[in-house]
Length: 438
Image 1 (cartoon, one colour):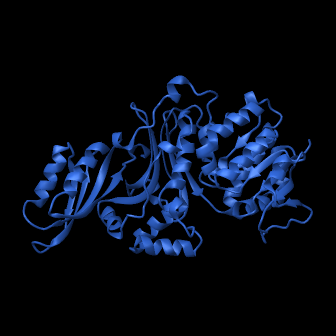
Image 2 (cartoon, rainbow, N blue to C red):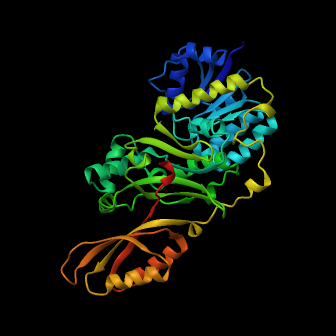
């Protein structure tokens, strides 16, 4: 059979990894695909010393790849929103299939891109956009196709997980571990996307769309970072039997869909609590299969390239298939009226348990007033830690509550912070038991 001819746009970390995996494993890839997958052209601005481009047609113009008549599949690995969107839409308009690792592109512009691809009858594959080399998209879209997905919860950003892991293991401050992560190349010079949850929200948006058959709705995802988590919070969570992880969580409820990224206390014995360092893991609950867990390298040159090349294999197998009979981009052949209208719930309507930490003057009646405020909002206390102090000094008070609506907790925190005996803002971290994993 004729080779599938590939044009790679971007030769950075992932682009270089993809080039090397395709060339190094060419024989095995050909046997699996039933035809060769040949690199026709590579577009890049900065050379990658890890890649031997001898005999390869190269260019500095990515749009030359998108219009090259000899290219069947454009592999978009340049990242970002705007230029990547133009490149992918140009490739689709020229009748080319697309493989991308760009989670921001799919989360923000995916609805437009998939509509254009459907009109042209071409494939857009994006396994590498979520959790690097972990095949979670294929698992959700195909392997779990018989299931009604109840929830998805995951550690889907390695930088944040590295920071929280070392804050716990070493008792260090957030800023200290972040600086180390930057020095090691795990965090960017501007780490905002990672530590403030934007990267994870991109990925969760994609997972939720595939899990529930709803349009991509990144703008409705609740996003909260880990920069305000302190070493004391990590220590107190440990004392209470929990680990703090930066989770992306999506749940199907009677009121709608939850779509949220935030620091979360989870019990120590849960599987996700024991995912350390830069690793990623995603737990999925299906009504038929029960809980499943997908674990591995969520980033890096060759782990991500593994997913890119797996997508190229799928394209090579499906390229001659009528597009009406291919696996749908977001798992569902059509967005049914009842499913697509499931609203994304505002954060204030979501119910969770909470960890609260506040500094209060150690004098009689303060704790009683805090408890009264919580009670008036219908919030019950599950556990309490108060350190000894000399009367009149500031002392930390740690509270663990039962499940309550976010709206009620917001009001309770507002009232507690207005107390004259409470200093500074109240720290609030949500708690998830994830009992269904057992």
